[in-house]
Every structure is written in structure tokens, then in C-alpha cells.
Image (cartoon, rainbow, N blue to C red):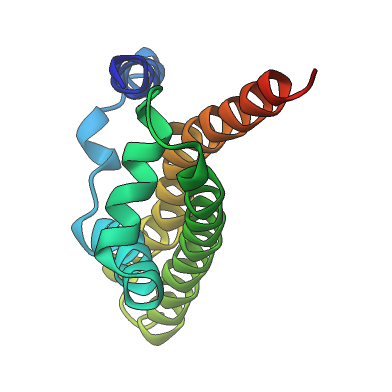
Length: 153
């Protein structure tokens, strides 16, 4: 679990350093409407279908090395569904941003923030994949492979 937080922090620091290296401000990456779309919508969608208890057990099954092996397959199902929901939320944010761009073409001051919303939704979706979905899915797959190796004679 600590590895995941260290990896997430490292990704965020590297992105911030890359932005600062070209003279930018890392706070440019904070966009509240997009955070709500990509950060909250996938959790609500998946928890509506699978439930909060299954979501919690999926995260605990991934990090708990001594946990029940039978929880790994449902956890893998959860993270695959969560990945698809994050992709869909990123696309929803992109389309919403594009609609806002087209709706506000008569006001040039609105074009920049709306483009930012459209692009940031894809950025946040990719960041969630890199920092959450891929590591947790890999941990679960590794534990499944280890348990299968132990069961073989």
C-alpha cells in the first residue's frame, strides 16, 4: 500500500516538475469541474452497480497479501469495471468541454477554460489509470499467479 502512495506521489511530483521546467504553474492542472466528472462519476457508477462493500473489499484484497484468495477474482472484476468507468468519464468530460467550446465561440474569453476542461478530463483519466487502476490490477494478477503456482504440484 505504501508503494502505491509513493508511486502516486512520484507521478504527481514528476508532472509538476515537468510543468515548472517550462515555466508553468502546477496549479494549472487543477480543474474542479473536471475533477468532479472524472473523480466522482466513475466511483458512483461502479458503486451503484457493484456496491460500496464490494468496492472496499476490492481495494483491501489488492493490498492485503494475507487475505482470502477467493476475493481476488471479484476484485479484478471491480478494477476492470472501474477502468472502463474512468475511460467513459474522461470521454464525457471531453465532450462536455467541446460542447462548451462550441456554445461559447462568440466569447473568446471562454474558449481557453473550456479547452482546459476538455483536455484535463483526458489527463485525469490517464492519471487515474496510471496511479490506481494499473497498479492495483497488477497486484491482483500477481497474487492470482502466485496462488496458482502454489496450488500446482
